[in-house]
Length: 174
Image 1 (cartoon, helix red, strand yellow):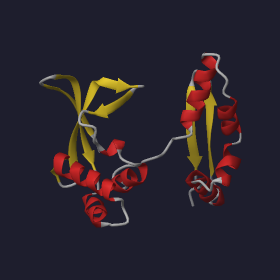
Image 2: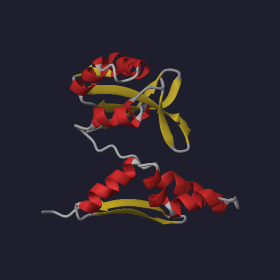
Image 3: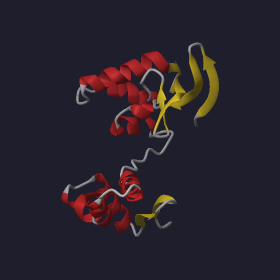
Image 4: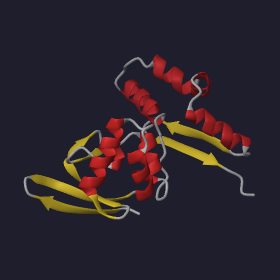
């Protein structure tokens, strides 16, 4: 689905070239859809014009030397990976699962607070009472949990300090 090569670009060291697959029909529809903000449509148009090398394929260069917190960033600041989640998810639906693991950041933040002796009551409260808090804001994650549990499945995560967090869900096979 994706292909990565390390290449050299004059003036930039340690570059990864990534082949990004996207649904070209969805992209073309999004470019015409006035319900999508003009700024987002301009971003999609720029992405399409700059990086498309063949139908449903774009080539984007990432700098290894410009990593922040372990993340790679595109050299020119634009790739599918930096687009808003709802746009990215629609573009990738044909080729990938695009999952928002936003809650894992709270567990990481809590662990870092503990490691450095910082207070993290609000973060810890969110982690402990996540389901109730998300119900109160009618979150997509709550909706996903409801759908999975009503289908006879289970969803959740487990976390161990200094080890990591595992997100999981199970659905029965019928």
